[in-house]
Image (tube, rainbow, N blue to C red; front, side, top):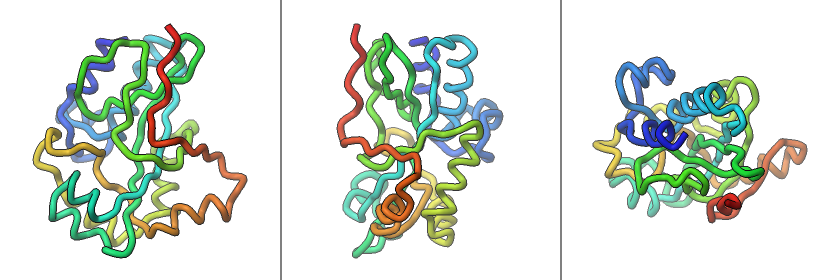
Length: 203
């Protein structure tokens, strides 16, 4: 299992021509969306006891953070008095009876196979997915994004994964848009997590 996770992490970060697992494998590059969809499929096939679950997190990004993470070009798309919201995809898996977060978006220190792989994003609202993770993501985008800014952001490509600390920005909205949606729809299956990663599994 460790080898599988590390192989996905080692794939260069970049958006395939199409946001599909097939294009990711063909072009040998992927984002949080394609990497975790592929990883969830393989874990379910090879390690069904881990019960992989894809989760989408909506977190907000202000201009200062955008400048630090992505550079001036992307930062200029963030309104000075507001923010952008990013939809980031990651996994949770079952290890020793506990749900553990796994984020294979970027390479880093080798995973030990029993603890958290920290998320490549800030704190936010988490939405576990259903049978069609891509449809769930599109629904979140439709609910929260400014489509005009979204098209601009998707046209930006980062020079290399080593220059990027967070996943590509994919949803734009005001600060109040993302937070008010949870208040307006309290029945939504949403879980708020702190900025820290989930605690490591008991070994």
